[in-house]
Image 1 (cartoon, one colour):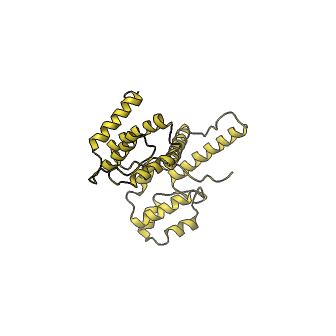
Image 2: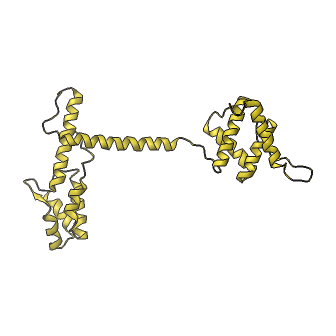
Image 3: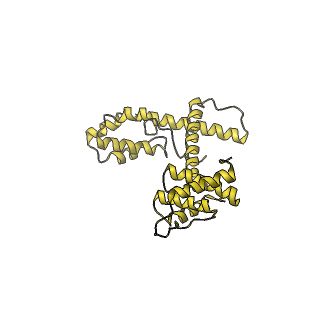
Length: 235
């Protein structure tokens, strides 16, 4: 059976063991704990390796937290966690192969719960990553512009039977608009101008004979008139 790449970590047990350790002793403890992922216990040679840079007093601190067995040394809660996970994995493997319909007697109910929670967290993270990868519309301005943009899309749909086919094409249209003006008020006026004149796209604001832009109120009145005329107040 392939080695399990993880074991259940219990913060309460870990903090209980390490809260009074010196810095060097805790580093040695952490390395011993990680070694449990490859070996159910730590050999005498491995223990000497992990503690070789410790003083006698620091080594005693670590030894107080280890249980001596025939095969070597263990951190009890880590060894117990690994055994439970091994039993669980074995019972699941047997069930998948159809060799047994019953879960192993050593199976722990809490293992099922914790594995399910772990899988739910992984699935949630994957879904969030997928959603993040979905291209979204980046609106250039605030709520007032957003409402005007909705009016523009409604106008395009009803007047020209046109609908943006993707987020990319809609974003390109926004880029085209903001290339003409970089402030919210002007962009809104450009949208109103296009709607008032029945245009399909965006153009620089028209100017009157004095070189000034067309009266803003006139544009708004024209837009409202067109909306009421063509769509019956948006219906």
